Image (tube, rainbow, N blue to C red; front, side, top):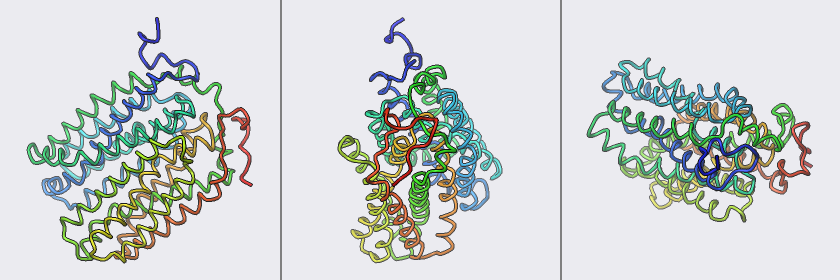
Length: 421
């Protein structure tokens, strides 16, 4: 049987990946990540008010369910990473998509906040098992280094664009059918696209073993002993905590300083636009732009946007520029993390190393909004800006280091890479 008649998941039995299979992986992950984020995250602000009203609870109580999913995902990240490293992504990502679809159906049928919280426990598992982190791990396993960055950036760019453009459709669905039917429609769309897509195109466990057999990588224990790992952890945790607090509190802050509700709610669109623009630039010039200095610069731009926003006052153009600067950091940060980790620590244990950074990132995403709410005014922007500056500075020692664990000269899984000078 030829490669043309085999299913894509059975084609790959060595470290090489065909161009056709790589494109299929990118297409399926772009669609499944988009549908997953839309069904499990992006729909929340659209249906928050009618859902809280019907269930007889506060908006805060409903919105807090997202914190439950974040912390659940953090708990699941390490075991999921180990399974991905050992067996590949087909079973994990297929099961994760199925869990997510069931969770959204459970959410749609909720009659009390407790059922909503239960559904978000499952949603946290699903997000960890079948969206960005898992998809990026499979792409790192299945693609050669020269194609890896473009593949990751393309998935993130398409999913980022889709999740921002979908809001008018979500609003229409909610207005026409109500929040319960909207969730059922999204659950069906997610399940129908992601479950068979993952089962069809993600390499099997046998193919995964063939992919990593000739590759190199640093075990998680050895990675934890390297200064490089802790610098990257500081950078990505700082950036993630900084932007998460802003995204949650931005509209309230802008209203407090005197902007209309319409302007305040429209302002975060600039973040989505700049995420897409920054990723488009990386996609176009992937072979010419070094990702570490690009990430450091992007985090510094994010920091400037945050600390200067209080000075912008009620000036809409200045506020838009500051908010757009935050979008640059967020846009680059999502795609820089898997790329830099793969370059620094290799392929064989990539998912475990990624999970080790994902856990504190999740804690920061859950905790920083609480700190921002406690501060309550422009001071939370300054704190977020300082965190982003720290994130940028943490990457500076790595700018002149270009590790490539997949190259023969680098160390393999039997020992750590050389320490930073």
